[in-house]
Image (cartoon, rainbow, N blue to C red; front, side, top):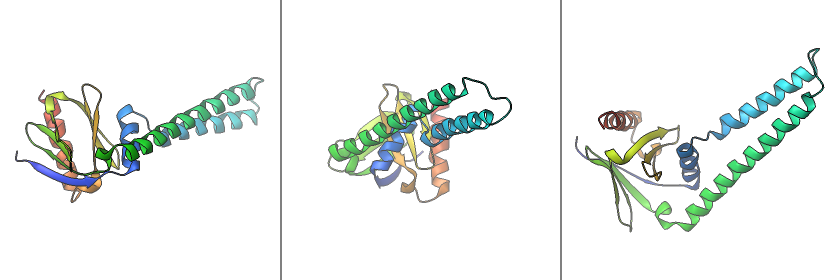
Length: 166
């Protein structure tokens, strides 16, 4: 395969999304889950199947929801702080990939090349791709950098093929 290149500039939301994706956190799904549990507990408390400890259980679920929202907000705030503090995150970046691996080249900084054998996983959401190295370092490429959906599918399929050939 020949070298394919895309260009982009990250945003603070991209950095936060990459952190969530890299760590397996889905804020919307998690918050919806806790709210669903609270609604179920409310429905049970108003029904004939109510029991004495339901208020205690609802309180515990509420506290867990609050703690999770706090953790998510801290991750987002950390991503914004890192974006402001790390010039490489704000730089215009070229990302390329071929049979050898992925190269991330922020303008004005040294390029980082990651061989496919060093990539343990590829995750994606509606916003971006996240390449996860074996040492835990992540690299992201926003999907808006691609010309069309076919190019997005091309990277996904190529990365999966490389992952299966290790």
